[in-house]
Length: 300
Image 1 (tube, rainbow, N blue to C red):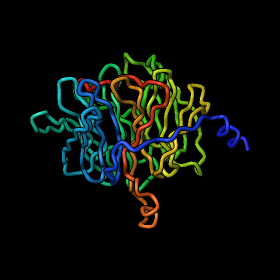
Image 2: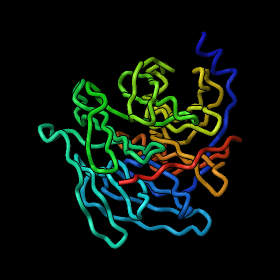
Image 3: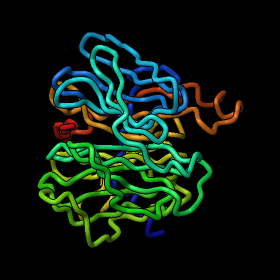
């Protein structure tokens, strides 16, 4: 009853289709403000997609392996998580591996990632066989040094920071929680974990997240067909409904950062489910009435 009351007080929005591309496992949307393009990956297809909404131009990089994320670099090109490696993708097509993790766990791969205000890369891994405690959250410094900041995770997912950079949000999906830490921007350290939100398993698996300019935390619910906004106090105030069960990650974009893009997936859906969800794997968009913040680039 209490959960139903919370839902009743939340405003409800409906997303529109931005691209009906049918990604197998669409993930990791990230707005490149300089290029005015949205980056996203199709993990199992091994592809990085760029989309410029103003011109409708699109391009694709075929990585040739599982790609968990792709983010812009300050010096041009991209940094990507390809299976268990961190790879620099040069604008001219060159590639260079700068880090490799978890060599002893071939069933693990990189998943979600974001850059902090200093330009460090924070990237999490997941266990593709969902082995409890087998994954971790890593910090990759601009000089290439790698440190495991948190271990004993299973599906390291949504990452983000409060507008004042004093809090960091982290999801380990199978815990059904959004965790929040105190964040030391200078040291690149997290401490004092506590729970911001617990999500009922019946509502879906908490997946990717983003934080808006007001500090609201938007989280995609995989299997739940919705994105939720929680206030910094953990109160539910907005629900975005999507015509696809497996939504994966939200990100703000557009010239004014007032559009919320949401990736989705056909992953784990049966033929019968796909017949009922022809838009599974599409990229969705909604204007929620709040703006996002520019995303930081990797300084490495």
